[in-house]
Image (cartoon, rainbow over all chains, first blue to last red; front, side, top):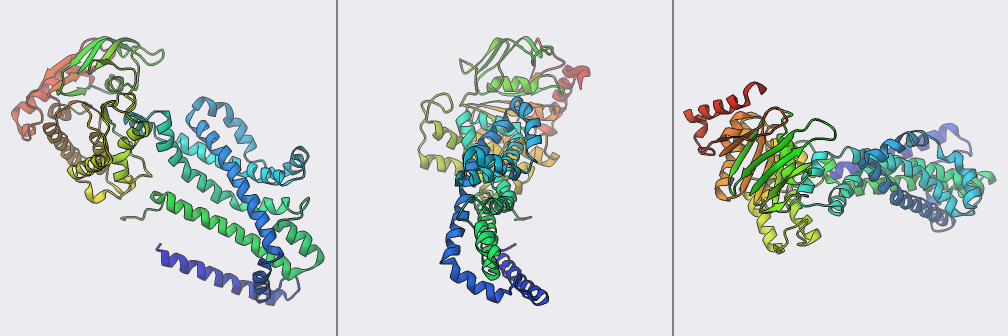
Length: 253
Length: 259
């Protein structure tokens, strides 16, 4: 797909989305579903006010969680992927823990880590941690032994193998894992922000607007949260295209 | 150049593959090692490369005992081992980058040779040119044919200026015309730059075409080196000659019932 047709696709998507929204608003015809022409101008103005602050808080939490998860999960995944014995010991444990919906641990985390931003960031990082861990582990385990052997024969010791093979090999795995799980991360953020905080889009949507029946304002929050997810996904995709062009080769190119 | 003395080697508790094995190769000789699968030919190559350790006996390359990969030895494997995320040019440069990463420490890079960046660049360009890869320098391995990938692997090794070149069935995954093409190229390259070379193959024609000396391994444990001298190797028209057929029969005879 060329650059232009990608942009065209995005524009078509947005237009279809707005038309769909408008039609649905007509059909439902109740305060709970205001039309886009009411919400969009309000969104633009409030982004510079209260909403912007909440968006900033949510963004900061997600970014902190992503950083924490990458820093911890990537090395562990690499280690498990390359050291068979370690993998054999931990694989059953990970297989059991990986599918547990981590959100159920929220009360436990609050008690252990306190009612601070740290607990919310930790919860999201925990979800991302396992996603990244599993993908990086499998990617590292799939590295051809012959690839390692031939790079070693070029003089590489452990440090050079790390910078020239393991790191570049795990980068696409990390980005893929993040792209897949960024949606879940934001969903969990929404739930975690509904209580025990004064900032964040979850708080804004549920406490500041929904519970006091400010429906159009509530939609500006929903829009902000959706955009946060969309933008993160877009940035990750862009990063992957930039850093791993070999994954986007076109046939016969 | 290579001196194998009383070599004994086995994997874990398996039966030995080599037992008090002796073999010698002089500087600038072109050797081929042939034998059926499981005979230990790849093991021997890995031992020479310093990727495996002898249980008993010792292996000397250029007067030094081999305990780890030696920076002046080049290794080319059947699975080219290119980095899929790097372009042709980046792959060819990889060994030079690794040498710069460590500096001339004598372990990962030759001690005395400190190559400057412009020379490196010229070296990379030279080998890309020589192997017909110039137009492909920005492509990724996934965009290349099997033969082109193996050319990249060869360029990557030769740009480091090795004095010993080890090849483990480098062409066996390629189709016949490509294989012959690369065999011819290997023969030409050997003519241009003198270096000691050892190619492991299970293909009799390949061994006879490329090996001035052919080491035949049979069923393990290997105790004695069976060597066939083959001075006509690497001549362009050797394949079509009567001698080629005779030499091939000789190899076949030594291999006996093992093929």
